[in-house]
Image 1 (cartoon, rainbow, N blue to C red):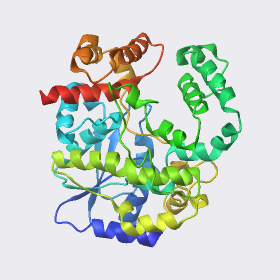
Image 2: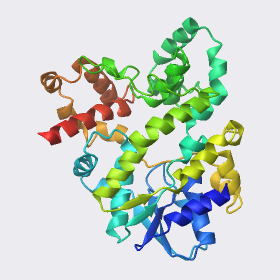
Image 3: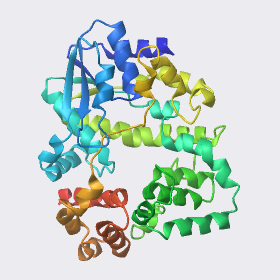
Image 4: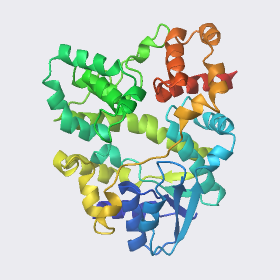
Amino acid sequence: MIYLVNKSIKNCLISDQKISMMLSGGVDSNIIFQVMKNNYKLPFTACSVLDANSNYDESKNVNLAIKEFKGDHLVVDNSEIVKKNFLDEVKKRINFYSAPILTISSYVSSFLQEEISNNGLKVNISGVGADELFGGYNRYFKTHQWWDKINVIPKSARKLMSRGLLSISPGVWDRTGIVLKGVSGNNISKLAGVLSVPDDASLYRHFTSHWDDPAAVVIDGQELRTEVSHPSIALNSRVEQMMGLDTLTYLPDDILTKVDRAAMGVSLETRIPLLDYRVVEFAWKLPLSMKIRNGQGKWILRELLYQYVPKELIERQKMGFGVPIDSWLRGPLRGWAESLLDESRLRQEGYFYPQLIRKKWEEHISGRRNWQYHLWDVLMFQAWLEEQS
């Protein structure tokens, strides 16, 4: 494993431009960073995000990882995106992508890519791909742990349980104090959603789509036949089936697309060593037990990383780029969102059923529910549509 990763990284370091790499406090980028730091004398710049005002701040873990590093460390303050005109930043990136990109974090990662390029760094190495290959997403090990237990409950009983849990808003659950410590009202809503899932195929759709029935939101909507709706692969387990579908769909169509287009928009070349074909082949030959173990994903990568860094650096909650869109939609972005989600406008444009969108919007701004992801999907399409006129 270490030989393959080492060889792939070595190939990625061939360049006549300055090399940089994304460094978070997580497993994927840390492996690449440690291999580069310990095996190659080529100078490179580690690039990371500081977000001191967010629950997503990883600066402490990054500082531990970068201890004794002799190279440059570019730190980008994520709060700078707040100081800028966020809507202008979103519109600029919509033009980079040439399509509605729905993932909120993509705009923050794109902001980081722009800062890297502005600092004269034109080649960037990323740890993308490890989650799909080595079982890193929460949905994998949650399915591994819980789906068999949930699936033995009759479907009719699960539906009743789901309706009961959803009859109380997340905010009320949080205020009652009767739920287990550390379990939020939003997590109860997520559990209710899983309880309502009828079968294995629907479980994957539930985890990968914000809207339970996207076609029902779009006027005359009908989803095309895709690898998700009609898989051409049939792997050994539910989790491996999810990983396979992610590798064929979510990874190339979402993750790699947004990374590449945003980077090219600021003249930055991205290289991804963990997606070297030899690493991919090796990963798919491994048994699932070497990827998911003890309720955690990426087991083999963790074991590899423990050779370089203390275990406590890695054993922590997974983080990501954070933007408080839920509260922004109720505050500074409310006027912009209200304009795009205006009922008469939606009706005139003729793409969405206005009543469904408006219901989600009204529940969100009242604070009864957090529909940030559902609404952001629609808002990004509306913003993209506006840019085309």
